Length: 425
Image 1 (cartoon, rainbow, N blue to C red):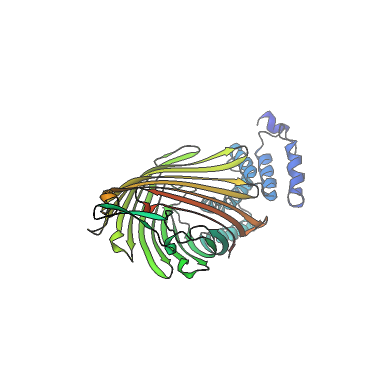
Image 2 (image 1 turned 120 degrees about the vertical axis):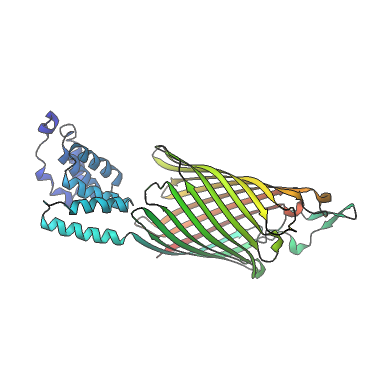
């Protein structure tokens, strides 16, 4: 036994304070660190006090130290599994708890408690969530109209400028929006599965600008806190002004090829069938191949998450008479999130560039090719309405998009802002 462990005083009299005043116990133990730096019992008791106080990060660190000194410290193992479970590492916690139950020298009372905990934790492998959100906001382009008041057409070989009818110009106004989300997630030993669905309905003063979006997804991912692979299939449907406009089906997959202490690097593959109900000639099959990275880092004492993807896009026409025929391009997607105050700030920037294979139409610039670039920015601030519960959350969203094109008909711009509350059940 080392000199440090021998110099550590008897800690048995301190255990009573663990239930009565864990914060005071933690302060008392901190003063003994130099004397007990090699005592597994000391770090186990310190970790237990921090666990009781809700400081999971420090509790995990000290319990790991206790187990490094003595891997057979049963009290440290019991609390270590509890910390993992509270941090969301459910499968690891269940596995450690199962190993504890298998010990032959367990007191009967402790065995019963561990069995009850195992049953409770196993049931938490299935997670069901339902939420309802309500928003109010303003959008300066509810009908996604072109920003130009005039369009230049080529008629009989001559350029003619026509005024855009007021009913097809951008219309701004207030709106309300309702969103429902439902999800079912099952944590497995090797694979996690997830089913989710969302319906969003936007209501405006003019019903012709009302928008309904519905989506459903099914996904599989490696059962890990940092899964190396995941895959998703999904369906999307859009109704605008009471008319079905667009539907799509998507399949995508990702595999992390390199993982460092803070970043994961991965390729992503996706294919999407796009179907336009009112204009079938616009339909196409789009494939995307990209590279990305997902990083976690600290600035000060704040955790940040930064994700970046660069993707090559190919959109093949499914109808022979589609204007412009096939399209090729690329997309840059940047996402950043970090805690701000009592909430979290999320920012996303997307830049997409596309070019048609052939001239779009003889009516526009004598059949010149259409080239487009779309910039979009999305900012969201979320915070729980109560420090003790995350079932009710406040949201503030700001979005902006600007699409530039060689054809004025496709130049659009819009800004919307909304605030709302999300309730989880």
